[in-house]
Length: 351
Image (cartoon, rainbow, N blue to C red; front, side, top):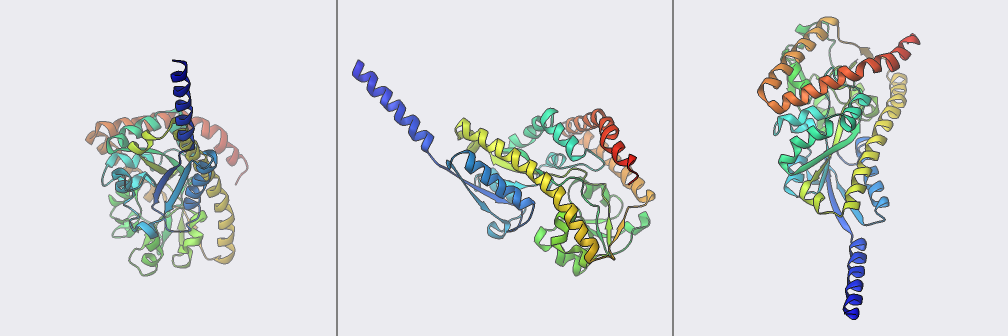
């Protein structure tokens, strides 16, 4: 019996060592093209953190849209197991699963800091899991751009009539809102945006802000740069195949979650940093850029259309109603503090 016990102990120790030494290869597909700053940097940082924290037990291969050739196919590729992970934006999947769009951003909604608090200390993560669990997926916050600009326009917008027939790239809930005002909304892959704007395939587009817009070159072909209303806190996402994730050892699951969280934090910081630097460059090199804010008539019409659409969505789907109520309740709870702190501070400077 003593001999058997010793053999069993040796076997357990060997098995534990073998499991600890086992390496796991992860294939990740991202919506972004190769060498795409900020968004792509978040994915590269995630890879770095996960591999370092796992002491090499995790090995992550990143495939850009240039390789897998399906920028908006990431959801299906991760769901089916063709890829283990993905990096994209939740509102891209609203045509497949309408309730996914609420987890990127909402017009007139929370700021990045408010939304992060909702995800991790409110109902955000739980509600997001309700939506994605039905599709063999986990979804985690994947990096926030902060408040996005309202877009680049070939012509000035002075009234609601100026929106009639306008061809614009604008995704998510905002696209549905503005289409109610006569805008012809389209969604175009990132790598095709500049050409579409330059050739007149579209009249306007929103992308992000100076952090990414400078590299895209939109300021070279459109003179009007409008401030935002539609995406006050654009959160990207990491997608993970649930079957793949659930089979990983618990410590590696924890490492992936922490690597995603850290990479997301880094992206928000980088986006803010790069926007400040890039806007300074854009002002110097292209002094004719005209920064505009949509007039009150247009903003009131957009807000009215947004409110009407929110009511429609809540009536159509009980889960949508639950998500929207959670977001509205959280915003009502946290916004007074945002106004009392950040807004009041900036306003007091007179800038």
